[in-house]
Image 1 (tube, rainbow over the protein chains, first blue to last red):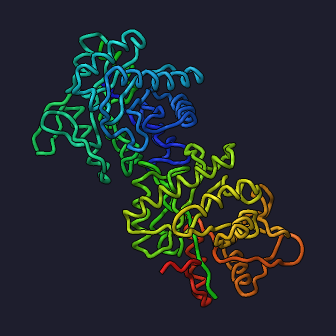
Image 2: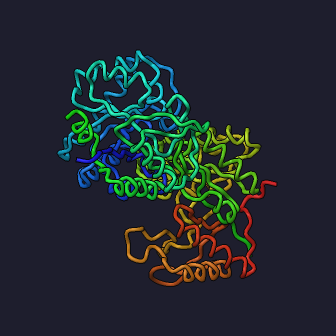
Image 3: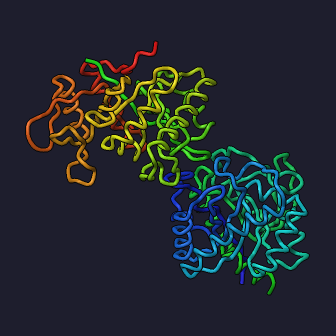
Length: 261
Length: 254
């Protein structure tokens, strides 16, 4: 069997009557293998969760919860200084919401991916990552945690035995330390350039940083964002580029099975 | 002939946008700006107010039920007292942000379900009128022509202006035909503009059944919530201008 890679995207990030980005959810769902479903704190509402979970089922996409800081207005992109206990409760609450809609539609929860500023905070906050993963060992021992390769989250998940997937960011820039450069406004990227970047990362495990340095990178899943301008074209280009080189796009759980086999 | 064009603006929230504010601001003379109830937040208000100031558009507050999930389109049961406090809080919020933008809120137009209820429910209409009358700056009310809200505002001595819809059918009693009825919305752009031009000349509005009726209107409500709606509003404006109609605010705020 050839190389497998997961392709994930944040989904259901509208709210009420508002939609985010120009890409129709269904078009994206046809391209990806794992979906991170906004759970109502930074975006999403019960109706969007219900709809996106059904789409994930229809397209055989791995279902993920995408918990965030409780900050709709800031779209979960602002750091909110609060205790790890409170944040873990926030995460459990949101995971529970997505899992319940999954139960409704007969889809198991495959993964959890913290969103935005919470993801970045967990990456560097050892206490938070430890408390989160310690809790997940009890509540969601088989649920895959998504994170950055260079993060406390990854190190602790490995140590405690939580299934974990490292991400490669197709539409974000890398710093020399292998972490992503966080930015609020993302320009319209060239889909082919994004696809080439992903292919190189898959084949050579290399990525060029914002400062022009080439660093090693390891990952099991590629992430692109539904609100990046041209998201559907980007997803299609990534998929086409990888498939042409014999790489198969598969849900994170399948990728992990192959890795551990 | 002269008429005002008004549109709802600033109806985004946080990262989300709604409609094409820039396009609508280029063609209206009055802007109804959301106040954080059904849509908007302080930053979104500030951005909308700054754009309105830059275009020289008269600014109105557009309070709605505090129901973002439902975009203020669902009736939330509330006492008149609570409605009055809610309207005052939202108008005050917009006025506060307007002070930063060097703007002034000149009138109030209730949004969505609240606006619809105020068309028929005298208690709700009075609650809104009372809240508006209590604000500093002698705010006016923009009401749908022929409604209880218009009547209550006038009865309370609050300056009131009336709006009509270019793309909606009217009933013999001067009310809008409910959206769920066949023919409630005029889909043909030219037909809608022709009807509006005749109305501006004669003051007579054709109705679903019977002879045209007399309607008062100082403003026409246009929408920018879809590309089709923006195109419709642009076409309306172009035709009005071509016919020599002046598009100007119903309020002279100097």
